[in-house]
Amino acid sequence: MVYCQFFKTSYLNVTQPILKGNDKDSFMIYICVEGELSLSANGMEETLKTGETILLPASISNYEINAKNAKLLEVYV
Image (cartoon, rainbow, N blue to C red):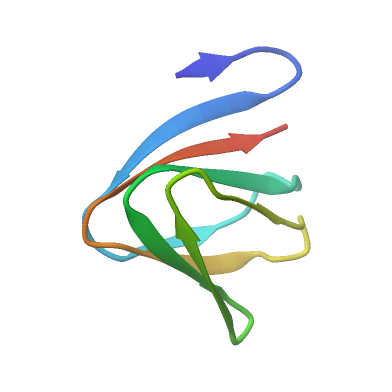
């Protein structure tokens, strides 16, 4: 979606669970722009609704995004 030397933004349409790995050595920011989702990592789970944002530290290497119909922006450096 947007890429420059300072950050990259991607658009994710989540219709089923996604297992993600952070191999970028960067924090990850997720902004829920539509719907509702849960994000699970290291035995913890957070729910995001439309308009909410979560920041995952670079130390979290594997996580799962679970939603039936949600749209997200993913931002990292």
